[in-house]
Image (cartoon, rainbow, N blue to C red):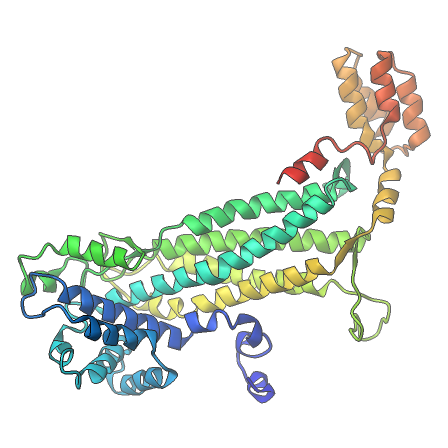
Length: 456
C-alpha cells in the first residue's frame, strides 16, 4: 500500500496500521465475505447433487466436483469485482454471488444443466450466516488463538524468569504484603489461559432452513426428503454446529458469545497494560531504548510506555465494538430485520484493533527489564508490611489482642527495621517462632509466590 493511499484511508486499519492487520484482510474484507459465500453456495449444490431424493440432479463426477470447488478456492479479486458489478443491477449482494456462479457454470457441459439448483430453496441468510461462521472460525483458529498463545507464552516465560524477584504489593494504592514480579505475571497467564480455552471451545452455530426457518420451500419441492437431517448433515460438514431453531436469521447467539469472550480477553489485556504502565512509572521496569526514537517532542529524557498505551487504546476500541455486537446481534424484529447485516460487516474492525493490541503489547513486553534496585528500595522502605506476619504468628501462640497491638504500632506510624524488630523481640513467643520473625524482611516475606509463579 502506497503512502498516499494510507494517508487518505478513513480507518487507521486501512491506513496507519494497515500492515499490522494483513492476516485478517483475506478473512473479513469484502473479498473474504464474497469468497465465503461462494464456498457455501458451492458446497450446498454438491450436497443437493448427492441427495438420492433429488432425482433431477445427479451426482457430479470427480472432475466436475473439483471444477466446482475451484470456483471458491481460486476466487480472484476480479471475480469479486464482477460480483460487485452484478450487485449494481440486483442491489442484492447474495443474489449477485448466485449470478456469478451461474455465469461461471453455464458453459460447463456437466455443471451447466444444474444452474437452477444453485441457491436452491435458500434465503440469503442461509448463505450469510454460514459464511460469517466460517470467517469467524478461520479468524479464531488461524489468527486470534495463535496471537493469544504467543502472548501467554511470553508472559509465562517472564513469570518463570522473575518468579523469585520480590516486589511490594499495593492494595488500594497502599503498601501491602509483598509478592514477586513473576507471580503477578502468572496471575495474568492464568486468566488468559482460561479465556483462551473458552474461545477455542465455543461452538459456532449455523443454519440452512429457508425463508423463516421452517423448510417451507424445501418441503414444497421435495416433500419426501428428511430436510432437518439433510440440513444438519450439511452444516456439520462445514465444521459448524447445527442450529435447528431459527427465524429467517440464525439468532447470532454464537457470535455474541465469541464477542463476549473476546471482550474479556481485551479487558484482561487492558488490566495488564495499566499495571505495567504503573510499574514503569514506579521504576520497577526499565524500557530498552531504541536509537533514533523520541520520547517527547520537548523533554529529551523521556522514554514513554507508548506500546502499552497503544495496546490499551486498541483493546479498548475492540472491546467497545464487541460489547455492541454482543448486545445488538441477537435482537431482530419479528422474523427478520436488516440491522444485523451492516453490523456484521464491522466484525473485522473489532478483531483488527484486537490484533493491533496484541502486537503492541508483545512489542512492549519485549522491551522490558526488571530493575531489582528499585524493587529492593521500595521493599526496604515498607517494614510495616511485616505486621501481617507478626500478628498472625501471635494469634497462633495465643498472645492477647495481636491485631490491635500491630494496628497501634503501625497504622499511620513510621515503621522501620529497628522498630519492627524491637517490637518482635518484646513478644512472649517461642524462640524458634521469634527467630523466624526476626530473620524476616519485606523482601523475604513472599509466601509461596515464587513456587506459584514457576508452576504456571
